[in-house]
Length: 142
Image 1 (cartoon, rainbow, N blue to C red):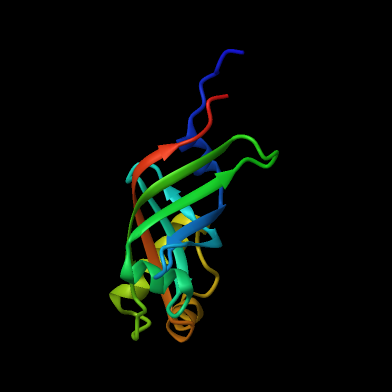
Image 2 (cartoon, helix red, strand yellow):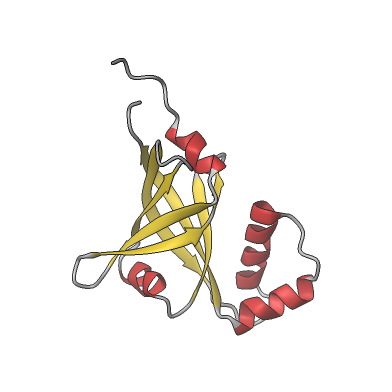
């Protein structure tokens, strides 16, 4: 059987749902399904999450992270590894932390029908933007 060319970056770029792995305080992995946006040109993965979630607490302690995506048929898959930075939560609907979430939304989903309502929700929900700088991507040889 001969391996064919497979581009794990393309699978990540086509995907919107993945499993995020962070490191718990005891060293075991903590897994979370997440919606994400991959900016292939900047080589970063963006995720909107909330302050107080396990993944957020884990990343504040240890920024190493992995994201796994799987094609709809279960094969192929791709994993991106990197280092996370967190922006927020914001206290001001017009502040830079919320502006980063607005930028994420625009890149991931386009225009929101009510930006004022979105901005208020980002503050009240204590939303945080997770930015993963991708260091390594891999997948199966198929």
